[in-house]
Image (cartoon, rainbow, N blue to C red; front, top):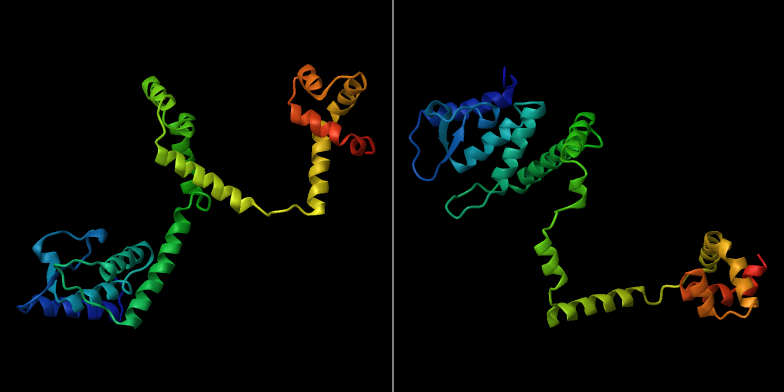
Length: 243
């Protein structure tokens, strides 16, 4: 059986049966007795006209008449009804207590659904997610493949003054954000040690070339590395020799 046998089901069908037997005047809203998401059809026998208040109450009762995934669907339907806004509709505005209850069950349901669908937490979804990645192939990681004409257009595009001003403003903003940040002595020591480990194979050759009379620029050209690296090594020669 689709619905649980409880008082909420009895109240639900009492409202439905009463609505079918009367002629309602004024504003009404159409309601599917068996919701479409649960297999209900769109014919007259499954549709009833309710007042806005009755419509809200029926959707509220549906969340208490079902379990598992069917209940989740009804919680989402109640959430949509509670937050729908349309100038042509006179939606029922629930009390603060009912609205709080609706938000609470929606948050719990949505959190549960997100965890179930998360590819890293659900093995089935993880497998289908990986199959999708394998099917798309490595080209999807590289992004859109641009035509040669588009590449040429991007290479030759002219920056407007506004774009240049924006880039300059962003650079200055980033520089200002970094300004004043100082390394601690421990950070200085750690960074220097990392530098030594990475470049220690250069020290002896640099010092030997300096002893032979080569300038900083000549050493950089001879060793095919940047001038500032050579300059840093020579500036810290005494400190590096004592390691």
